[in-house]
Length: 43
Image (cartoon, rainbow, N blue to C red; front, side, top):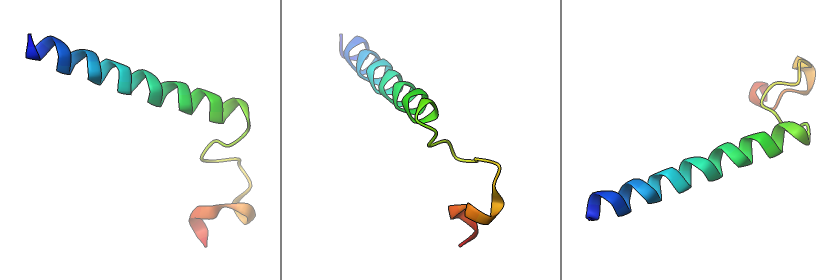
């Protein structure tokens, strides 16, 4: 029974992460916008 509960919790967490990634991409907040001069990773 514990395995089912833990598995369900993990599935929920993964779904929330995927939803967040999709929402960020739709809003243009993806990791790489193709403009290196504005890249946050280079600063």
